[in-house]
Length: 479
Image (cartoon, helix red, strand yellow):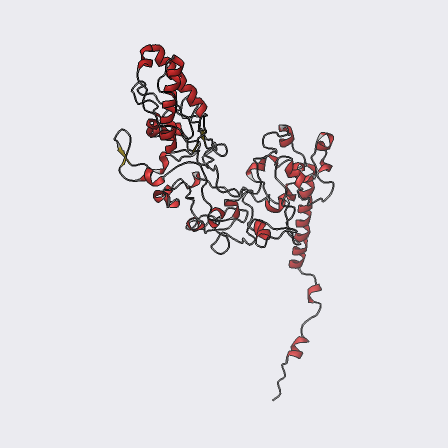
């Protein structure tokens, strides 16, 4: 038999105007929708009337900017609001009622940041403005931890309009394939500091000091953060000229816990090497050492010491002078001093020969000149090796020094660069990338660009301390 119940016949039973018929449920939904819209409009209207535009906000500000939460015009005003303009709500709502982006001049009112490289090629869609990297209204996240995409949008394929660049052109992530070896190691740089330092000799087992004591030195005996206040085991209390190196060092010391303080003779070396500054072998000055300072200061010190010694005992000038080791290129002094000044000059020459030819040259490079005092070559110890990145020693204080600087115990030359390579860093730093917020659940340390690189150079002129705002400007409710 033919089937009588077909789809066509069933479709004819459906009433086409069913959804247009009144129904209690449809009426309820309609009135609920109207009520929700009315409540929302009323809420926004009341907020505007009470100068509270929080409904427009995308979220709370970060901790450093939280005090501006009631003063949106400071950032979203486009230009600095001051005078009568600061008291007008229209200043913040002149354009873009619901959205008014933050401009770079608004950020530069308080923060100093250099412009991006002018020769850099920017593709369409790339953002190099302040708000493009530092995104606000994301709660209490650190605004400095900008997304890695802010960096890799350019550095994954770095191009310049003209000439060449010294930077690596393809950096996509902190990984063995996405990041090159650190430049100082990749280029096989050498330490050119004019100082004779043997790490192996200092770290070897059974090291015997000048007084016969056997010790085992470690890295922290000489290398500590700049703000470390505990005493040094092999140094002495700094004298009136605390630890001034005769050759000088490159760059000022850091004052925080992130960087290591420069090695200082008075703090780290004097306890062991003061005997190298003995200037008289006759026993005339027991326990007295020459200052660790420039040759001119040492010369004046020796003159004063021998003049005082001769004043105490005038018979000293009748004694025979000691045998001398001559300076290269210097004429032999007379063998028989006949006056007080001649005797003092003779003994000073002896003392300087002993100091500069045997004592100072243990660590320093010396240039000799005929009929003149020697010149201590400036040590020029690098204050920082990473010129385009920073490293926080304080954050890594749980590690031993040799965990990263594993070549230090075997180094015998000053020229050795003992920095760890990227392989050592990747043992820990292979975790989450920076996406502008703190992430959880990672079993490795963060490895985003902002962990080591900060674009803004705040060592130059800028708004570091010379702010121009008053307290009432920052805290007053201005919308």
